[in-house]
Image 1 (tube, rainbow, N blue to C red):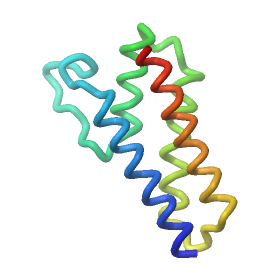
Image 2 (spheres, rainbow, N blue to C red; image 1 turned 120 degrees about the horizontal axis):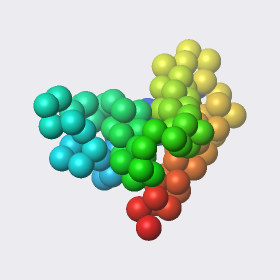
Image 3 (cartoon, rainbow, N blue to C red; image 1 turned 120 degrees about the vertical axis):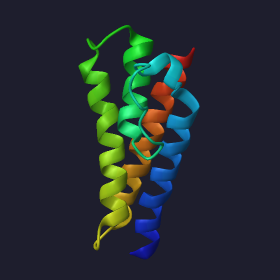
Image 4 (cartoon, helix red, strand yellow; image 1 turned 180 degrees about the horizontal axis):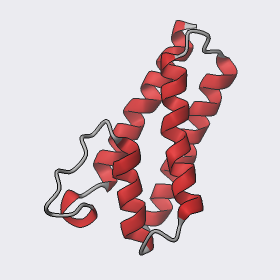
Length: 105
């Protein structure tokens, strides 16, 4: 069980690395506001997606982006994490990484 929880922890670390890669506060955040810290991956990656897709009209894509961190944190903090939940969280992070790669093209 501890290994599965660690999978969630590693998923969170990958999400933080992804957000550090795509998020640029000078492009994706209002100048008058303090940008979110690296652990707020949903806000950082969400701001990148909004900036990259030209507005807030891409709610379905943002919805996917919000679910990957939620799954990763759920596994990371779950007292009953198992192979299936850890695998699904990892798959969600991989999906998000692939989506961000496409947006960077």
